[in-house]
Image 1 (cartoon, rainbow, N blue to C red):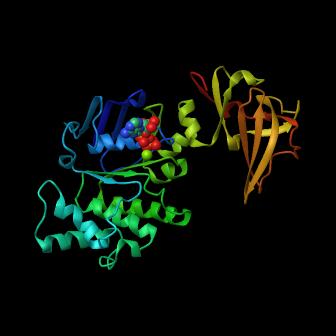
Image 2: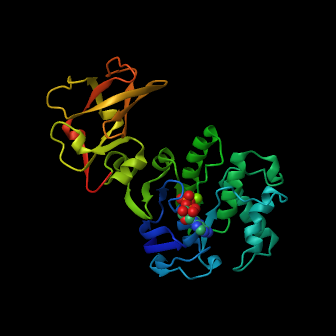
Image 3: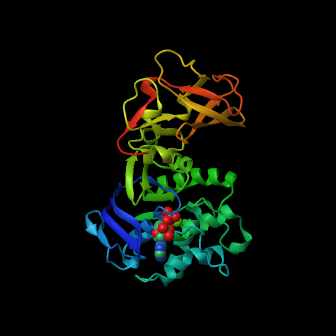
Length: 340
Ligand code: ADP
Ligand code: MG
């Protein structure tokens, strides 16, 4: 089990991480979701030992690892851009870590070959060892990067936006493969990403990083359906977040959220009895196959969205620029403390 407690890291005036408490259990695919600049890479670099925290403790199975040289931490790191050696073959890229590791480099060619072949097989690249890394696809390069990390048998594997450099088709295939590879290995993966779909799809558990802290950790369903604060809700990209004061009807006070697919529109002053509602101007709609997204501007300027399904349309015909009442069931509301 990897544990971070009160981990802090600043760069001059920038506080990248401001007291991170976070646990990655054994045998788990953990996603860490955060916007660009939220400190994801910094967090991984601190765990790997490429840099040190200003404060706090990082430990594995109760054993403190911060302050220890990177090569003595047994942590694998898959870099955002794969960072392969362009002049080496697939085989030599993977074998490199064994030949040149600081801690007990391997010299026995048979052992190097066996372990490298095993790692290539694990990622589905058996038979590709002799190829140059310039002569394989993006997805295959990704797998070489993974094999190069796995061959050293790390205690945990850190993946920095590992799918970011792949095109959309490949990305979803790699998602399945990463999960399958991890399940075979039984080693925990910590996968950081800015994409909520990726985080929710990949993770057995998902943590959300915002404002330098972990704001919520949970299983994907729970995080999506029950965000505990506005920051988590915002990261799910599925919730309208607004001030309860904009609403007529009883919704409590402070910041509230209603999911895009649990809010409806009616003509002004025609919201059904018993449903809280707020006035908003219809901006535009976007049609994506079976679903459509409609955008509105609330009276305080916040942007609101409704997702409608074309098989069961529930919105009236609307005119851009006209005002409507957006309404929802009282029990569809999530209420948060603090400001939106
Ligand atoms: P992410 O990976 O989530 O995009 P980073 O961890 O790269 O975020 O960066 C977090 C914050 O720390 C950003 O504001 C970034 O500009 C700052 N930062 C990261 N590394 C450095 C550095 N070496 N020097 C100065 N600022 C840095
Ligand atoms: Mg980053």
